[in-house]
Length: 453
Figure (cartoon, rainbow, N blue to C red):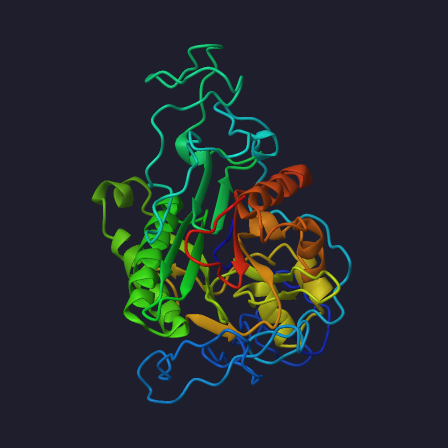
């Protein structure tokens, strides 16, 4: 779960490395202002690296950049052309250590809670009667989507669940609906789980698949992670994911360029979360010391030849090619304290991510966010693969692109729902210290009607 930024005492001056005393506001040796956090590097939300168009990308997109600047969008690049490169053209994790261990972003909670979520590693394959069946093609599917009323017990996998929430066969109390969610929308699928330590699931997602004006297919996924230190993080993630999913789907159907559509979707998500700050009044009176509802967001759009990602915060997107001899890549760059320290040259990546402040985010959606800066990037992969869109509940256990690639099943492009279940299981096997949500999108987008095997 993401955290709001918090200042903590430094052990040495980041300017001259002189030892510091607790409570120092300035370095006694060089006078460095210790209260200053370096400004994040200048972001280029719509900047992409040039490369040759990929076969099959025949859509004639508008060329205007988000925001109506009138400038033309540069051509997208292929992740395989410059492996390990971020959307700004900088080297991505060039010398990242193999493992840094599990990072915790909130105090330890009890190991067990009542109404335990089902283990996706033991879930039965989806079928026509599966409650996790997909929403209708062309409509975003999210936590509030339609579900089969005939629910099956998560404990015995045989009995029907009565209206009081207990199994008619074994009497086992069922988990809350949001504790474990599975959805499909055409060829894209997502799974969200409460994890093993948290008392509720504060993640949310939305999926969709549609046809573009020229008849070619497009799929989308939005994943949001509620900020646990804020008020009603679960409501924030739900509002953001639904607003972004609806906006993105409508924009694509109108023929809006996917990168512009992603920018619009993040703005709509921000507005939806901002609207929660004033309601209900009782929430503010109950906890006046807490921050306004907030969450992070990451999303992806896949067409027949174009891949677009957008984000604010520390939820991530990864590229994993079907041909595992080709390099995978991380497609997003965190808005976090650790990433900021590394970008400013004050710490190595290993030092920054080992710090207790590593997960303090510097960008989020919410009424008290510093400033909304949606990041977007577009790519034209030259080979099939899958896009993994996830919260830190997963990438804590598969942080580098190579580690994520190892965790993704080889048949992920053909079985996205199964692969999402496997990845959630990977996080639970690693400790499940956080809510975990992952969406899997095959690239290129399959023709309409294709889905999970």
